Image (cartoon, rainbow, N blue to C red):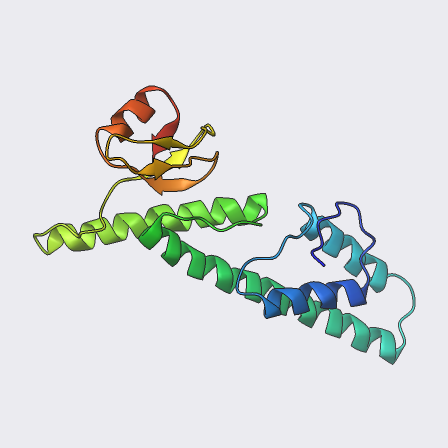
Length: 176
């Protein structure tokens, strides 16, 4: 069960469930948008008051579980950057912070790839410009007779002259 509720009361079991779901899936799992604030509040609650040795052990376990969850998501985001640069398909279920990081890394990797292949004196077959979709459009057939489904916030490659029309209409914006 994905954790998409915004104001769930976190418990150690729920944090472990989030980690387990993240570990079991190749894709990023849905997490509350304010998951960082919820985790911070949960740790503060656990740090208050007198501590027994079992409380200290539990707090260490909580922090270790949160770290593993973070590292799982971090690894998936890094893999998604490579996949997106190569295919143009961004992942789902990223928080705003993760999405910001994702697009910064994607832009940097695209620049690196373009520089690398331009230094070789040849263009890479997949060095097609990438675009960020600003407005969702109904599915349509382009001048190349291919079907396109553009959804807001997707990252796509679009051939000329279709890209020029969509840029002019404000439907897409070039990345990088």
